[in-house]
Amino acid sequence: MTLEIPELWGARVRLRPFRISDIDGRLALGQSPEIVHCFGGDPRGLPPYEESDARSWVERNLAHPLCWAVEVDGRLLGEARLDGLDHHDGRARLAIGLYDLSQLGKGLGREVIKLILSHAFGTLQLHRVDLRVLAYNERAIRCYRACGFIEEGRERESARVGDAWHDDIIMGVLAQECQGQT
Image 1 (cartoon, helix red, strand yellow):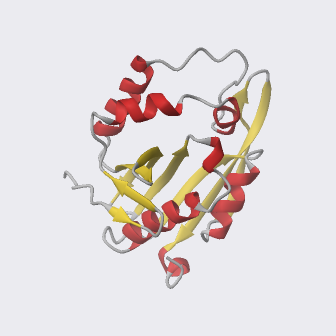
Image 2 (spheres, rainbow, N blue to C red):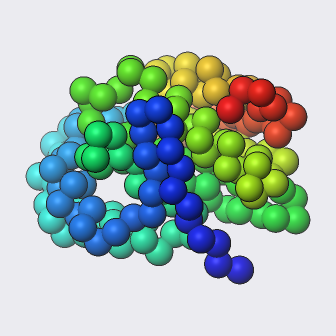
């Protein structure tokens, strides 16, 4: 079953289907060592972010059945996805990536997540949405909690970042917990 990816509008963000022209926007965002680290990458010695990297990123997102480009003021900021959609169990896993360090801490991630949850629990009629986040990514954890996610567990030393092991935190939110929040 192929789903059409609808545009979702918030007060400041627009979520829309990806297009090939997003290559230039992603290239302009580059890669911040701090953001790479928050996603579990080793920020030391990052190679330059090149057009081929941006092209691969856009093509991967174009092929994804539930992936939105995140736009603010007409400019690409990142992506938001629902992975592993399971209609039988009414569940999916949220993934979000905002790539401009100067735009973090402004509530944009919260706005994106609430739009995605509204779509997941409304249009898609899901029962739950979960996610995993590195335990040291405190900014993201605060954002997820503000959106109604609850810590459900911890996978100890499940992610190797550089030379160190780190825990992943598993968080989830149920449809009935989001009623009135989104």
